[in-house]
Image (tube, rainbow, N blue to C red; front, side, top):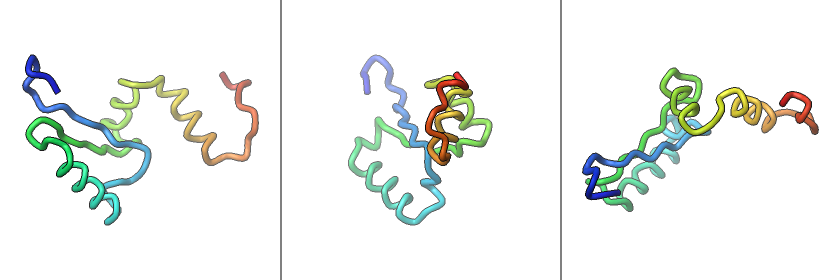
Length: 83
């Protein structure tokens, strides 16, 4: 939020299907109401979409991100060998 860049800032919420869930939509609306709506926007693209992949690559190494996500749902205890 800067006067130098008057464009609205965009906060990305990823990692769960926020906009497909009634509670997620309520959360999204509450966040929009709490933040200054004229200077902050929220977005929640799907991770598997092209836009989601592009945003992940903006912040993380996509390959390592996918490995981390896989690890969250896996019984593997040691994944250092994959790095």
